[in-house]
Length: 186
Image 1 (cartoon, helix red, strand yellow):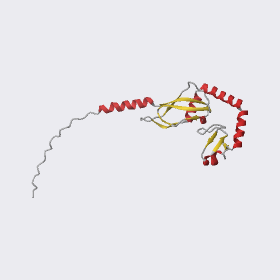
Image 2 (cartoon, one colour):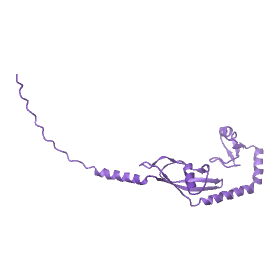
Image 3 (cartoon, helix red, strand yellow):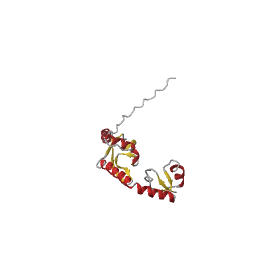
Image 4 (cartoon, one colour):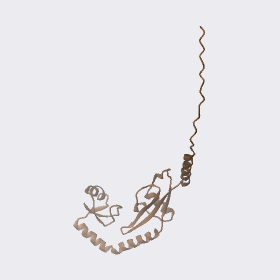
């Protein structure tokens, strides 16, 4: 089913894009919610005319998006999370977490324009920020252990305990003397 989007939908397309979607998704979600219209020949002509009239407005929007993208150049996010001894996170780092960390740095970004997979392990990842359909910024995300010192101490203690196990020499048991049974007096 061919549709014209009326708003940006992350993972599908941007406003005024013509996209192909499955019929059920279009009929049951996009059209009733007002997020898209059927791409009939007349709707395509109207879209072309609107784009022609709005060309300068779209250029201004792109310029504003590029300006916002400049603010994110060189910015990286460091997230401290609770981690198990194996490096597995308790919970996960999501777009909400990244948006909150950027807000702490003074950069206000809506979590809905950030895309990334949920992070479940310690390491380095990349979050994509979609300001405009032609302006996408990569933000490096580093996840570190909140309790790194405790984990290092625990691993050190495990290594210290492992060699500390000393085999004990077998102890020879003294033979137990059996007592002679006295004959029972009758």
